[in-house]
Length: 70
Image 1 (cartoon, rainbow, N blue to C red):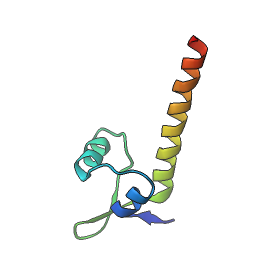
Image 2 (image 1 turned 45 degrees about the horizontal axis):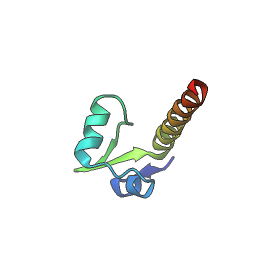
Image 3 (image 1 turned 90 degrees about the horizontal axis):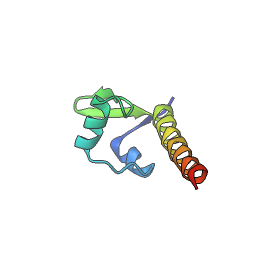
Image 4 (image 1 turned 60 degrees about the vertical axis):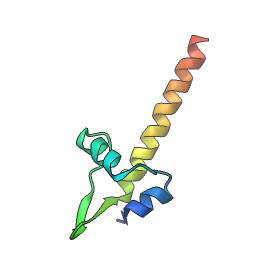
């Protein structure tokens, strides 16, 4: 199991501000981080990858809905 820092999120293309990530997490729309030390948080990489895959699937469903309505 690997952990991803805030910098690691950016490397995966997730360039949200800390506040936006906090709001998404609070709303249950982004994986919750774990504490890895004082004032240090990290995310489980598999959970972040699953979140990204879900976003891709969401996009693809929306795209197919557009195709079907044409």
